Length: 111
Length: 116
Image (cartoon, chains in turn cyan, brown):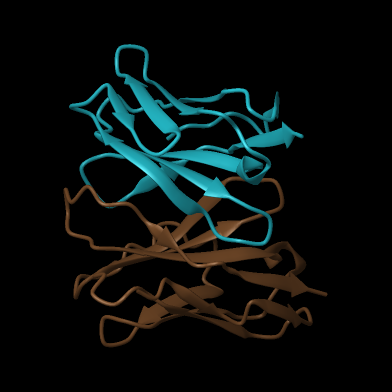
């Protein structure tokens, strides 16, 4: 699974700008990926998922891009709003039941 | 519909006491997971239940930790003789399940455990 170290990466963006959060995964056999948003005091909330047979998937204001060649996943948030401030986690799943989570990225939206 | 429900939301206990944490998964979800999250850290896998299969206990940190799932629904995570390092948020998640089923985990809001 992904490991990005003990510190929590941070990203600060101006309200209205687009945000890009990145995630590297380690298992080339992983075939299912998910992005979660976690606000303070709450559990992770599902945002969007993508299967390995796809390169891109769009939701409401969010887009996930998958680059299997370099084992990289990104989450793009359009027109970032203050309510988007949270910690974002990627998760990978490998044809089974185990999910591996990254440490997360803390997004702060500046009004 | 109702999401994953966990209780209590907060638990403060003295070192050496036993605690039980409860999880009610989403109705119809056959897979149930427990994770632990320490402050500012990622999610640490503890245990996984799938239907009537034997649980995957590979993530339990010590024999003081155990979990059961009764009737394929409600699950209880028990920590015996709690230690200060057990302080964390314990998250439960469920999913539709089945090997190879690409469905996401749905999380509860967790139980924040503080061992004094």
